[in-house]
Amino acid sequence: MTQREPRWVPRLVIVAVHLDQLREHGGLLGIRDENALESALARARQRWVYEPESDLPRLAADYVFGICASHPFRDGNKRVSFLAAAIFLELNGLDLAADDSEVVEMMLAVA
Image 1 (cartoon, helix red, strand yellow):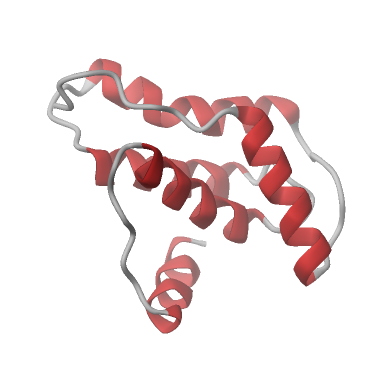
Image 2: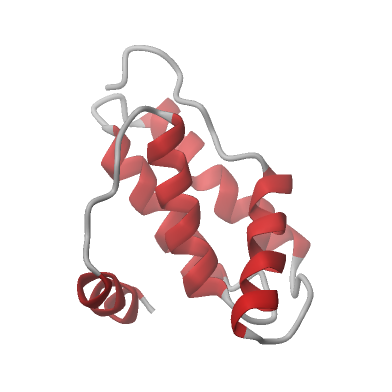
């Protein structure tokens, strides 16, 4: 288990990332389901509380799966989920090292 509580990615940051991704790559604007977004963002925190053996990469994976599976945004969910995980790891002192092809392969497998 992580010894101290990790730094979580705030909802406002996730929404800002979504907007930035849409500006850069296009897509439909907006949150499709507010409850799905809240649930997706709570997933990692719930794991941290109830599964004390969870490490930071596992919690980052919860951001990816939570956002991809619940599809809270009208568009850009895979992009946002990957960036949420990367931001989470960075906030907690880890770097996500993967080349573009690895990221694409992983995100398509999750979706």
